[in-house]
Image 1 (cartoon, rainbow, N blue to C red):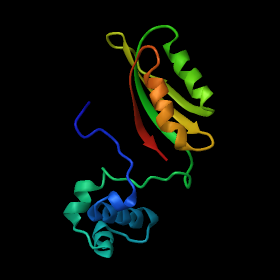
Image 2: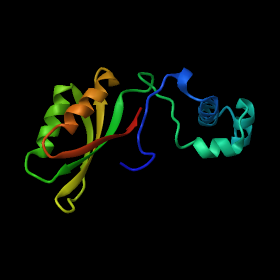
Image 3: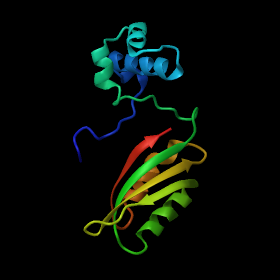
Image 4: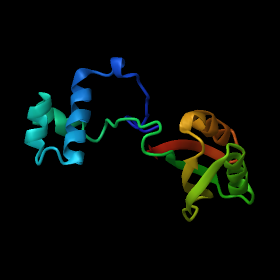
Length: 147
């Protein structure tokens, strides 16, 4: 696995203060409450260098406030029926597929990107990923994004 590509979910009390300040600065910028990075970092007591260092690495997890859409990247063998098995697993978890994109296979392996609406919530996501990863022909499953 590529260094730095793993995702973790932590309770707020376990997250270093500098990262929490980065999130607060991003919220100020995204909401329009501040007009510049300089204003946002000053408001939360953060240096610009820390903001730029971590801004792409920390995101607030929204369990239910924005929806339940997750994007999965799955690498699988290009064999008949493998995609169908994955779609069946997703259906068993009562998830709704919003988009599907499968790349042209290279050396017999294809990359599959799925946007899935987790109904009623995302709490089953770890189990869903685990079941997909154990499916025939699947090399790995990554959660690319979730909102």
